[in-house]
Amino acid sequence: MLFKFDPPLSRPDGPRALGATPRLEHARRVSIFGFVMPTARPRIHSLALETPVTALAGVGPDRAAQLARLGIRSLQDLLLHRPRRYEDRRHVHTIASLVAGEPATVRGRIVTLGVKTYRKASRSVFEFILEDGSARLHCRWWNQPYLEKYFATGDDVMVYGKPVSLKPRIMDHPEAEVIEAGEEVSIHLDRIVPIYPLTEGLPQRWLRGLVWRALALCEAGIREPWPQSKIASLPGRAQAVRQLHFPEEMADAERARQRLALDEFIELQLGIQRRRRHLEAHARALPCAGDNHLIRPFLRGLPFALTAAQTRVLREIRADLGGRHPMRRLLQGDVGAGKTLVAACAALMAIESGYCVALMAPTEILAAQHHRNFARWFAPLQVPVELRTGSRRVRAGAPSSAGLVIGTHALIDDAVAFDRLGLVIIDEQHKFGVAQRERLVRKGTYPHLLVMTATPIPRTLALTLYGDLDVSVLDQLPAARGRLKTFVRDAAALPRVIEFVRQKLAEGRQGYVVYPRVEDSGETGPA
Image (cartoon, rainbow, N blue to C red; front, side, top):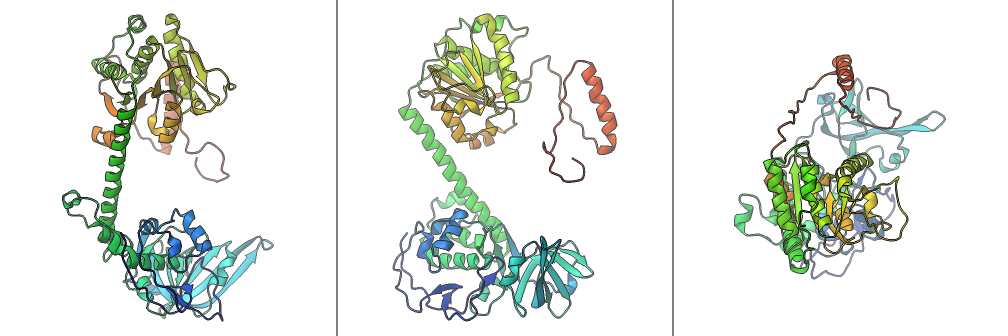
């Protein structure tokens, strides 16, 4: 990915923008897209996408630190820093044509500006008034008085925002960018312009110019990683990177996003495949298929028979537990489909084989519920069941000798150890990260892994999200299970809803209420 380039040596004076460094009124300088640099500089003869951004003129230690906060350390990081939105600056509105509540871009000159303070100077508002010949626009920023030093009367400014009032015309906290003269203006005007996620002190205009220069230097080094047949009608990778930042039409940006998303997807799947092949090549499975001396009495004691789906899935799990490679299986099923019972049978297989089992749940409530159920089920079998949560921690010491240990994230604490860990079960897998899952698995020597989720995931999507896992689906509910019904009621029906819940509680049933927030934030309005 190396190639030569000859950078231009000078450009007109650089940009200023909201959050930019205050202007140096009398400094004499020559710049490229606003980057201060000497009038003569050595040529850079080669550049690669892996090159640090500090190789670009104008990216000193301070700017590099700002870019690092955005995860930008190399030129590749910079070129994949996706805009959060775009402004179509080919069609700038007049101030007089603004409509309340509708976002728009306008351009004009600042005729006056200043900071007003109130509440004994504890609050402030910075405001400038923009004029474009058709009308005036008040632009306000609350409690940001430092913005005054980034603008001056007479500045040519581009503003994007939603008018909150038309008499007078007002925008609160719009995005504002000072327009400078020179060749660079074509990057910021009369085109579809990218608006990037920023960090404190990093100007929008400066970052846009940096991306423009990086494209000019690196575009020839962007190679196509896949055969043409894989990308179908999508643009090539180099074209997609350019259209991501500077599209000719809005549709180009979406097609570029789709192309780069496809790249990420393929890379993810290849990584998952490598991970699975590495496991199969280096890990020897623990013999955990069991001998049925616990499962038979357990199943005989149940007041119901297993469904055909549960029986099928248990056969798949037993085959894995007795196979050559450690089991890595996702168990998917609706609420009430019997996932917990399947997990209990899988745990008994491992315990029959002389190994212990760890079951991790996302909350203390769910962990305690599992503990009650498993303790009741396993008590006749004389299989000890322990509970480990944040409020029930143990001191570091000897590993647990219980057949089954149930807990929350507390299970991955260094203080928790296991004696002959043979099977790890994770409930509500989507609520745990891969790193958390791996920390628990590494408490044993390649133990088997069963993860469960009630989130309905199509099989193709499940293979995408959990490509390192085999997938089992409980697609059948027990015969005695009722069907779930969902109803939507507005606030006016709340008394009837409360009465309905009260009636069901009186019948001995259970209910729960989900609130959008747990603690009082001090805000008014409905919870």
